Image 1 (tube, rainbow, N blue to C red):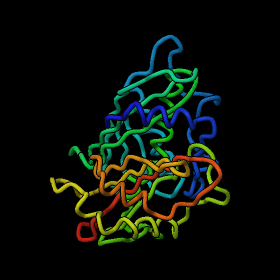
Image 2 (image 1 turned 90 degrees about the horizontal axis):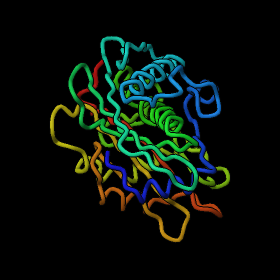
Image 3 (image 1 turned 180 degrees about the horizontal axis):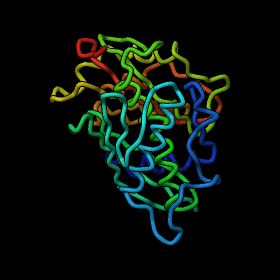
Image 4 (image 1 turned 180 degrees about the vertical axis):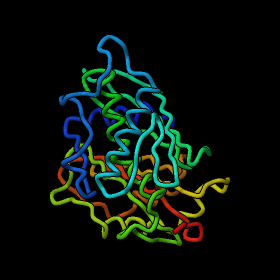
Length: 275
């Protein structure tokens, strides 16, 4: 995922107040390690490789899914989900220094049951005091914001409480907020239903028509509350300007300070759902 320098700068400028609003059961008390905590074993003199980051992401994703009562296990860079499998590939596409901090962009590609799934191509950004810490933060945020939704959709598409819109069942990841969130802003199922219903008229035309897109995905990265709202929205990994225009027109909560809202959804077509 080609992350623009402008987007990296915006995230870095809001990083001081970076939080993840966790909406998944038990995720808040069992999140993977972050900067400042004990880190996974790695050499202090060598930089983390893409292969190491992929294996770490698979391990953390399997653990997170298991804690949320979804059977999962990790083998190298692959997460096993019952009869399904999810293989991860990572690529650190950009690491830059801004305002004394490192900003790392990390791309994720997925194979489902051995088949590349272009619609699940995604990217995460981490901000920290060193290159490896920033990359580890990008892994942690991808697992919570992206990986959980993908794993849940594969392992349990009809999971209790799953949202439905436009002929899809929708699995959401953790909501990311950077900067100062508006007072009382705590996205729940009802909030996500409102956002998805607002976007529904443009969903199908925005998704890829190429097989084997058995799963579709939507990423919203929106800068809100400032003089002019702006953002980047991707449908199946591809920038979708019209969808983003509609997303920015939603009645977003407003506070005294600007903030960034980031949300990932995975869509399972109703006619393709498996028991």
